[in-house]
Image (tube, rainbow, N blue to C red; front, side, top):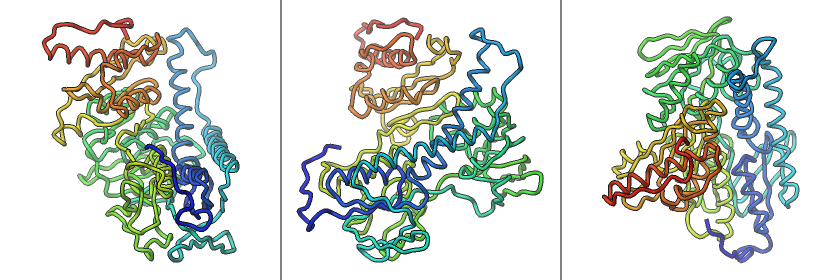
Length: 489
């Protein structure tokens, strides 16, 4: 996203008044960018800076999953010669949740401190658009009016709860209530096997819960390639997680002691608790956007163009409220782009197709760009190279040998179009693939990049070498790129 020199005040007498509804990743990224451009920025947030990403969803859930990672390392400790005299560890849910809450608060304060170094004015309250150019803010007992020249709506999304689910927030809860749990559920039913459902299945199973994972599809992680999802599925089964496929849920009920989840085919699943992980819905109610005439899609998200503009002039939307890839990184990119576009300071549309994402299961799953399934669906010819991680020396040393690297490249040019990593530290190693995809680099470039030994990144180089060798064999030249690292990686 190249930045061009802006005309900061060419359309305004004084500084542009840039108002933001929502302080999540899109909101605070936009606030920082607009302030740097010289705008008079007001950010309105009613819960806390960082939004649900920081306070209730991504950051707390990864804190909980770090507990699962510690437990997994302890389970493998005997392989490294470490023994325990007093038996196996157990999870103290109150302390685990308390730590997750502390992490969330710490991150939120960090965002507050960074904004405090700028000219951004943060208003604590609930805002709605009263009329074009004016936002009314309910500040817990008194009203405040804020005028704007440009408005960004970044109010996020909330867990979707089906109308047939009995929600008591004790036995049946969503991801927002996870931090309210005071003990490990004896038998948890996870409704939904997407990224969120699989992450919570991972955490609670590691914490000692019996877990039943219900997928409406024929695989877990339906947005991933089948062979990628299968590795996670097999890992789950090996650790005792029960998986029920093709389970489209029609009823969730609760009594004093149990929950009962019913599928469309008549199957019934009984446990002590259930967590609903069936997606997110944009937070658009009560914002006054109906009065403005802002267009919504069929799922209730705000419709935007490639510059995050809505159907109403001067109004932008970014982050989860705009639908699409509901990722913190995506939201931050959208918010920043919207702010810069307001100053005519960007050249070209926002590019989101090469944003990487990670699922923090064990093993981790990380992907970027074009998948094999998407290529087949769209009729795009690709070369697919797979390299399994069983021989990676860092993995063998650490006891994490499961996983695979999968590279998607153009068969003619060798340019990387996408890739997936399943395995130890996939969330870190996907950055290299993302950079290569974003910059249009070839598998030859990746194969010729020196890496550390021992490391998980060695296997990324091995995968690229395999892709190069396939291209050489296909061309009939009969030569091969020499290995620059030990073959075992």
